[in-house]
Image (tube, rainbow, N blue to C red; front, top):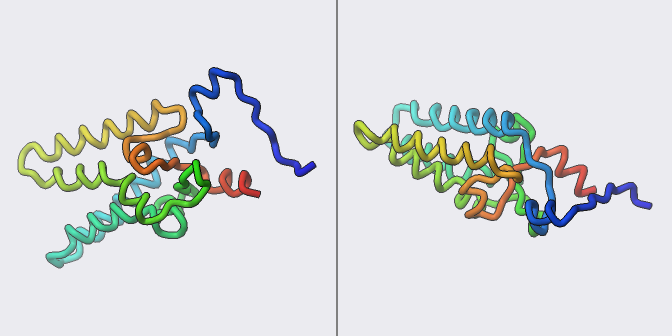
Length: 159
């Protein structure tokens, strides 16, 4: 016997989880990790160069492609992005797709007077989806076909 745990699903469970089953990552951990990533974007933005806006946008888009599906915030908190159907860690392609809605919010934020409101609506919608989804998925995860997991959980499942 390999010592692996077998998860038995009912028909109702199968409808909720689909063909792949991974536990939902902690919402608090995901919020903290994304906050840390936004701090990196804010730090880049404060550098006195004209290119900082684009550098911040670029980091926001590709952050989850570093260190095998782990942005700086996710590395510090212990989270990881994977593609559940292939069990591969997220690449830059998946990172760009999953962070596209947040990049739109970042771009819209700079529209005078109402930009911050529309940005808040996009980010708020993403948060509500993440909290309400049984798998913790937001629009970006649906676009990229990814899921955020606790790094230790993913590593233990892969052994």
